[in-house]
Length: 249
Length: 330
Image 1 (cartoon, each protein chain N blue to C red):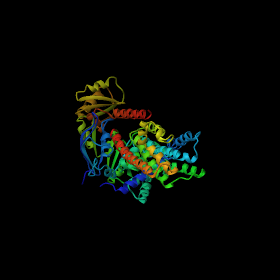
Image 2 (image 1 turned 90 degrees about the horizontal axis):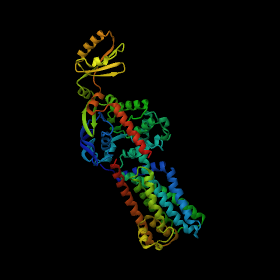
Image 3 (image 1 turned 135 degrees about the horizontal axis):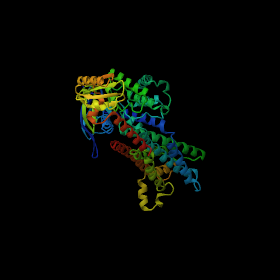
Image 4 (image 1 turned 45 degrees about the vertical axis):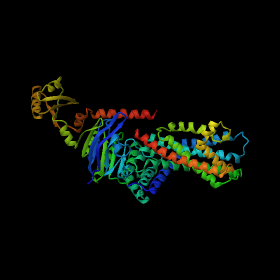
């Protein structure tokens, strides 16, 4: 009795494959995962005295965060609306593995959508990324954490807007206190405390180190550690919330 | 041999609402079992608990000897589920839907392909296997759902209102398939509000009302126990005014109903009623066109036990569906 870890991983990959086929090119995903962060970046960049190189961490952070959460936030709610989630639930797979599969799909989307524009911009502007490996590590954990956040919010939603609204209420203010537009040290002290709880803050600081070489390795490791912790916590919380919501019928 | 389904005191409460109230029953392997009941009686809640989708408040349920609450994933390996609310993935092809389901069941690729090919051919959708399911009619989508449920060749199949809203051809095909699967040894647990469907398909029927199992027997035994009285159905060659009143006043007749050009006379003594009918026909110079003694139907037994007719159930089902559409539409 019970499933081996390898079998569960295979099932999670199958769910991720299915989600990628269905959601990667769906309208809400393209809108919220691709267009929104690019537009936000342009709003942030145009008119400011910043080189492409200096703006790269901002673009990468916004894209990783928005694209990573865009699949997670839509997939569960859409499947419940369409009745396909009942089909999934009838199959021999635990809620945790379902959420893991959806996290993998969201992560892969966020990861790919982030490295492509950032890579192209870096090549065109002949910017030198301080540490490409640490850049990939940072994007990985950022996309995982944001995928988890999307899933936590959609776990109890029956319609996409029920998940999208709270996600935007959280992530849009998060942009302004994460060190993306202004250093955290310029914020009032109570906001600084909140800023350090926000996952986007850790995405920004780890990317500033990986791309620009700002801060130090300790800060980078601490930020990536926080993002990894968030990814695991969000995975567990999403599965629990999903289970409770299903119990309500 | 272990029971396919064994349920003991199964109960589900939603707050103060008792949706399923201490029901107990067993379904043997190879049996075709039907659960009948009006809308809101607890059929779907029961099936959701048995398939591991909902945790019971109390009581136990074992599927093929496996505890549903403790090992829901192991139970799901033994069962196929076709529910009214479950749909295939519309954005994927029928073939991809089956490949996905097969991979979740841990089937090797070769077996998955073989099974998908056989099922899609059996269900008449092999030629459209690469089309997205969103292009399919409701009946064809239901066939894909059935194929998904059967991809791992489960020994036990749960069906929640499988023919609701389907065209006659698809509904008939599904009934034939279920009969064939049952003949090949698959245990089938069916919930339906189509009483006739349960009558022609099921070895045994449970009737659930207000969350309680109020009857459990074979359709024929339920019919026999439903009413002691018989129905004498008669039609005359011409209509005579007030004849219904005269028929109702016959000493052996308990109740009369007019059905088109026929009269149904409910009685405990059919032979006496037939004699009295002959007298009336002679007195009024009428010819008897047809005369039949009807035994009670499963619907009669159902009405006796629940107070609902199949027409009531149909109406309630439609109201339920309209409410769902309204909720979905916001």
